Amino acid sequence: MQGLIQVAGIIDQAEADMIIEEGADWLGFALRLPAKNEDLSEADAAAIVRAIQPANRGVIITYLTDAEEIKQFCADIGVTAIQLHGDVTPDELHKLRAIAPELYTLKSLVVKSDNSDELAEIVEGAAPHVDMFITDTFNPATGAKGATGLTHDWDVSAELVRISPLPLMLAGGLNPDNVAEAIEKVRPAAVDAHTGLEGADRRKDRVKVRTFVEEARKAFARIAADGRG
Ligand SMILES: O=C(O)c1ccccc1N[C@@H]1O[C@H](COP(=O)(O)O)[C@@H](O)[C@H]1O
Picture 1 (cartoon, rainbow, N blue to C red):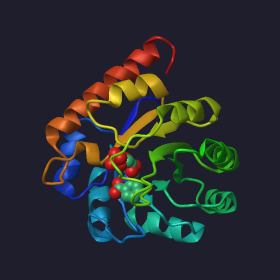
Picture 2: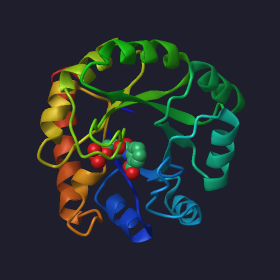
Picture 3: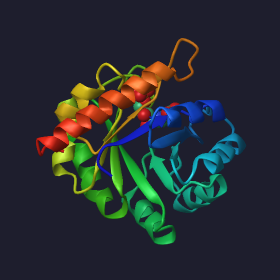
Picture 4: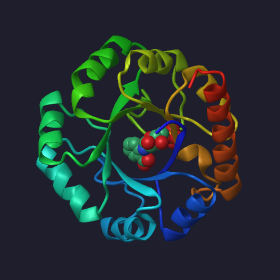
């Protein structure tokens, strides 16, 4: 699992194909969001997931919080991994693990300016029931918890890496210019980016994706070589 690269916010098959050609491992599909501002339909997401798996993993990114609904939705789309961005209780995570043990589950840790103690509590409560954590950035101006294009205090993510018994994916404002520094500082198992890889047309830019993957792979290799990965 060390050195994994996810690109989130897939729009269509052409974009998915390009991202895979440029070497990303996992593709994130943002669906069932509170603002209902999805970039693609559920039917289109399911078709893309069918086309890319099993070589590349499709991950649903969602705010769903009900275990039964999450399980059914993953089955409908055909994914084997889910990134839970909402306030899912440990009880519901426990239930999800019981009814869908095969589902690889990522739980978000949304970093604000003053919530590191709260995030440490989420790690403790959720760790027995999930497979990976993902840190992302809160935008106080909009209330958004993901796809903000904003970085957060990487010392907070680095501390979460230290205390978490599970691997951690770092997200939030990552782009080709800062991903190497972020990996060196936080030492995550994985990285994830969305808006930092887009061009002016709001689609992923091939050169940005390529450079992001290259920079991330080199940085992961460096921290592995010096025993810090
Ligand atoms: O990708 C989305 O559209 C999305 C929507 C709602 C919540 C989370 C979402 N994505 C996650 O946010 C991170 C960071 O995005 P960015 O790089 O700062 O733009 C993204 O990697 C997804 O994991």
